[in-house]
Length: 98
Image 1 (tube, rainbow, N blue to C red):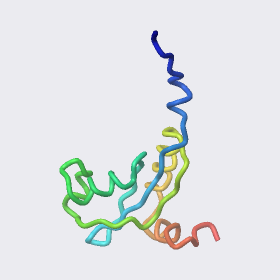
Image 2 (cartoon, one colour):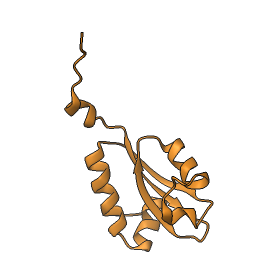
Image 3 (cartoon, rainbow, N blue to C red):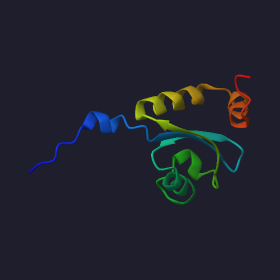
Image 4 (cartoon, rainbow, N blue to C red):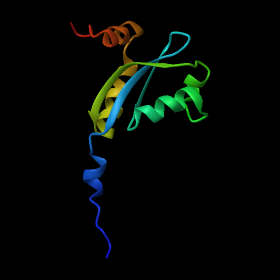
């Protein structure tokens, strides 16, 4: 018997997170993932890490937003990437929009 999988509902699961890393040189990197622990390990240790962060290791997690669908996470990532450095720092400190 073949098991049916509801692809639409599984793709819409809210298991993505948006994160910001601070790199060794002080620059900020924004990304999305479903497995933050794995992704941080990749950024810091493996060739799978983003090209940008490979040259700026080690990186540290400084900001996290959870419970997004992939689509909403991608849109939020794009919005954060458009922010100025000062706006990103305010977001990290929790002062953005105050």
